[in-house]
Length: 102
Image (cartoon, rainbow, N blue to C red; front, side, top):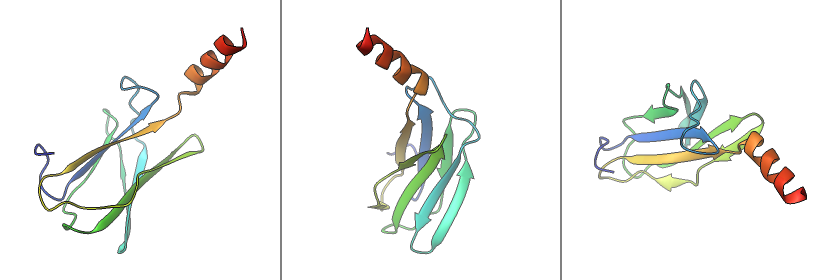
């Protein structure tokens, strides 16, 4: 995206849909050089900056025991990256299960 500086990744963590941001959720960036963790803000976003172009990166978090992982990808030379990690909405999943059983 062009609205983030080059070398930046914004990871948004939600539960089920865009209205359910997960604040203060640790998100880990893994690279060949190690790992770095940033907690999400009130909008459910964790931002990582100054990532060198071409570096292979992966982002992950664990929400209530559910592990969410991005694919490994090389940082682009132009612009930044926005991504979404979506946890299962257990309440909604239970509602869907009940509807199917009825």
